[in-house]
Image (cartoon, rainbow, N blue to C red; front, side, top):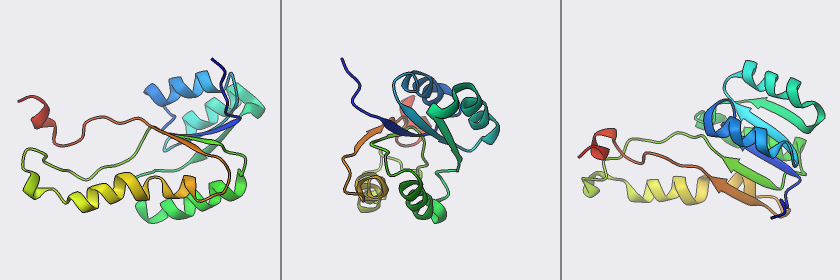
Length: 141
């Protein structure tokens, strides 16, 4: 299977699944890695040279997220794929649906998370890695 992307923005790339994905992707295309731990981002760039670029940013900083997205789009207009492997979530107890602000939840998931990457007219593909939606104690019942 061919890999069609030339430049991937990988958010959440300093450890675990994100770092493993970055290591694989950089073999096929340019990768811009994003995460909070600048030292790990710098190691990745040092290891992969011109095929890698890094941006230290905490995706949970919602007040700066729009500016982050604008800066990325301006500095790297050739990004054609976004791999979102990190984020933040407000606590929701899905065992009590009446307590969940479903409009706010849907806004976060379907509008706000895609807006920065899809605001350009260039072709884009977004991939999301998710885990634990809701309170941890709900998973053990």
